[in-house]
Image 1 (cartoon, helix red, strand yellow):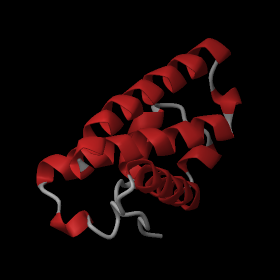
Image 2 (tube, helix red, strand yellow; image 1 turned 180 degrees about the vertical axis):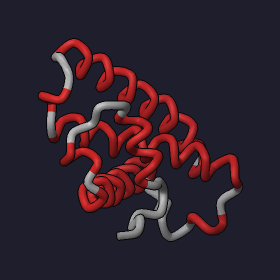
Image 3 (tube, helix red, strand yellow; image 1 turned 135 degrees about the horizontal axis):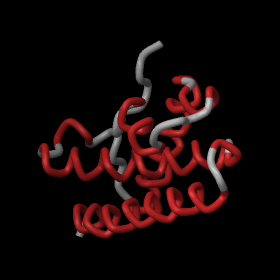
Image 4 (cartoon, one colour; image 1 turned 30 degrees about the horizontal axis):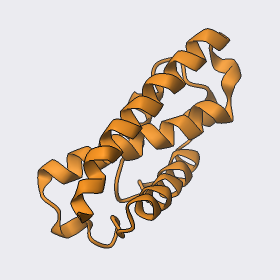
Length: 113
């Protein structure tokens, strides 16, 4: 199976989830779904179709967008199976990913200003 999303790769999502991910969290069909879901949320959030306009973006924007998409998709992966780690570890991972996503989105929103 190949990556189906545009804004992030399965490898980026798995890196964001971290080690000891469950079988469901590393299943590529799931990461593809989470990436596409993140793409929809991000495009809706900025009011700009990031996927359609991806080819016209510079490497700077593509990297920033990939980080945000991978973080958001990883959040979905972590919440899909929260029993992989102790609660405090899962919550810490979610907090870090949420902060990474929000900080990146602040910058990405300037793309449409």
